[in-house]
Amino acid sequence: MLALALTSCSSSVKAAPSLKAQGGGGCSYVSDGTAAKPVQPPQTDNVATSGTVTFTLAMTGGDVTITGDRAKTPCTLNSFESLAKQKYFDGTRCHRLGDSGLFMVQCGDPTGTGGGGPGYRFADELTGAETYTAGTVAMANSGPDTNGSQFFIVYRDSQLSPDYTVFGYVDAASLKVIEKMAAEGQDGSYGDGTGKPKNAFEIKTVVVR
Image (cartoon, rainbow, N blue to C red):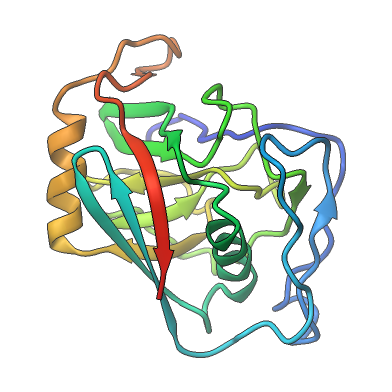
């Protein structure tokens, strides 16, 4: 097991229960500092709990398509969709790349520092049986129930504890795009075997379907 935390910004605010914890009553998004980019919190009522949603990220190396199952992670997808529609991710760069032992790229922070978030946080949606195989898309966090806007895409099977909400998967073509960009390496600046990608890894736009 690789003992490497996939952290996002930290705070002492504790997130409220998620939709599953509330028995389907709605999602809770707790105020948490200043948003890295102006954005409104997601709606908390009438959250979709069935069907799928697809996000197409136009990135430096090509399109990356993420598909999520609303029945499994309704509150996470509700947040991600809200941010995407508000163009929160547009023009941002993925700030962290792991290419040895842990194979992932971490994105979703407009500041590019790993410390930025959307100004709110929400609870985990975990089963305890999460695995992080190639193509998995999951939320980064700094501890239980600290999800914000940062997420990571796994491009080669990686071992992590089941502490990160898996909210989608990328298709084979998207995986090749990520792999090609990741092949350019990283600068080792995080001091834990990960660093800033040498490829720009920019998310130019996100389209929701």
